Amino acid sequence: MATLSDERSPEEQERLRRWRLMLGTGVNQSLNQRDHEIDRTLTALYGRGGGKGSGIRTQALGRARRSGNRGKGDSRDGGMEDSAPTVSRWLGDIRNYFPDSVVQVMQQDAIRQIGLSNLLLEPDILEEIQPDVTLVTSLLSLKDAIPGQTKASARILVKKVVDDLMRRLENPMREAIRGALNRAQRNFRPRLPEINWHHTIKANLKNYQQDINTVIPERLIGYGRKRRTNKHEIIICVDQSGSMASSVVYSSVFGAVMASITAIKTSMVLFDTSVVDMTADLDDPVDILFGAQLGGGTDINRALGYCQRLISRPADTTLILITDLYEGGSYQHMMLRVKEILAGGSQLVVLLALSDEGAPGYNHQAATDLAELGVAAFACTPDLFPELMAAVLNGKDLGRWASQHELVV
Image (cartoon, rainbow, N blue to C red; front, top):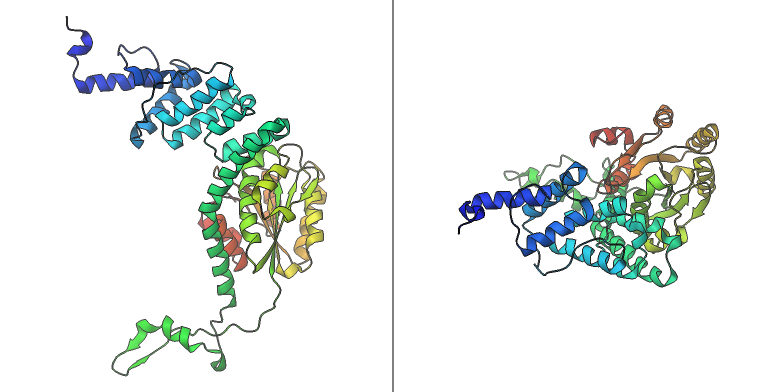
């Protein structure tokens, strides 16, 4: 006897199959073994049908279908019972059935929705998780509660993320800083004895005049005039309150890259209501992250006071303050400290966040008060940070630079 399913065209059956997986229930369509496993994996986290979970199921399946990732198809039990082995299998399942971008979203949803934070303390689960910045910040916030036998696994997970960020961000950062320093040392208005004829001819080859067999230079390039041998000093001062967790991760990576560039001197400071100088650990961003205390209060004034004591050559110093500007201490003293730093001749850059998410909630009044002092406050993505540093070293107007890149100011 023919069934209703047999009477449907392949296209209609595929359409109903997708609706069944997206909605979780309510669609009269049978599933094969692999689809049942996908359904159980989604249901374990998002439930069956209706509400927010249904929308998330739809997004996850849509991304998976667009990616063309069909997985390996091995059969595993789903479910999210409160046991480490089962959750570990679930983490393996979502990697099997969904592309990386979806895996990261589902892992983050699991942490928020079903208390996976407690299970992150299990070594088996740490080994299964596909790490990203969000998961690292969650793990670091729990680091003091991690059992001793698990800390080695947690450190490996954090190192995976740091190594990935270094691969992605190190070369752009180095090239941006070195290019900025080279441009700063070029002399584009040389006197006759200062002209670098080799570079001048090379830069003007397009102006070669064949009839007179010569190059007519439009732009002269000279040897750099005698420069101070002092390095430019960068102080990175990062708020380690909970809302700034991603900024701490990216700052640690960039700080390590900058510290390895001999043409500049880099210091790094973390703060909440206390201040910790992490400069000695800049050769290993993982050490910085495990030294951070995510969460707690905020005393920007105290942090600025500490950084102020690090400044020995104000004219050659840039202080990068990364904070949402919510001062837990004295706001008046904080603004007075800012004025002192500026009056001393140092440059102050305020980043409301250094993260992929853009600006979090921040103190708009403080940002306005800083703008009146000539200090632009804006959020910056990690991909733009190297360009920002080049703008800093070249003495560009950072408010204009931020506006050109449509950043929050």
